[in-house]
Image 1 (cartoon, rainbow, N blue to C red):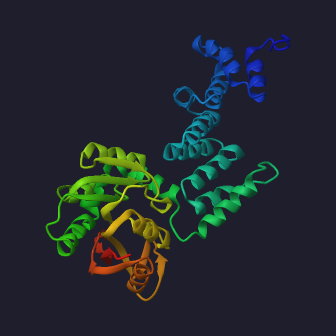
Image 2: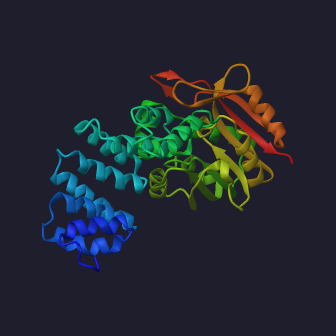
Image 3: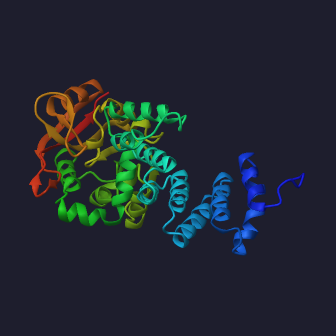
Length: 360
């Protein structure tokens, strides 16, 4: 500090951080840590300073190293989890915060951040379970986060954070899991439906909604002059990029509009199961299609009317709901058939494969 009131550089750095002067704190702490001086406190403060200064990769690297050096101290896992959460690395953040609580079950900050991580991941029930053991007196923002979680439970779609978190987690072995354990064949089903409604047409501008690792892109590559994939999960898009089927890959949410490009064909294989109310999606797809363009998709089937959330947190849609929605958004039905897009526990999942043609 300028007045020299702090002889201990660790104390001085702590005060600098409280004043929002992260760069100055780094200048004090980095030499100490480099020389293995200042101990655990200096390391934790420096990781926090890196994070506050926007140097997230350095914050994560130091917090990870510190957690390895002090594996039995809850504060190291808490600090590591906090910087992972700030960088939106939700699966690893959750794991570290859970570890901190195993080491110190009454650590309120770790429990609050765990609830925040579950909320960012779109898991309101898990978030509320964490928040329920905290007091608003200790966490001023707790009531706002609880209200956010409760509102999330009422939304007619799976939260975008949940979908991204889910598929980031599964990206490593997604193809093996889907094609092996779940006998997934939604892309092939849509390919067969396309053969029926647009037989032999090639040179198409195609948009693959929820493209994942690119299984649908591979199925439609020979029909496309330009193939675009859109997905919420950056980890899944990396797998799709490695597959090499797509000309363009976009990180995005299908309900927030699909850009300015126009397409001959939009496909969505096993994607609409994460959306309950499909009005926003139908509107976005209609706007993205050329006149007489086609929208081909699979859903899980519901008997009766409307839509419902199934036990696996996947939405089911009724035939009457899909037909009514198509007419409302300017589509006619070019094809509608029952199918089995995947299996669960070796049991076929009833579904629909639908082809809509834009008429206005």
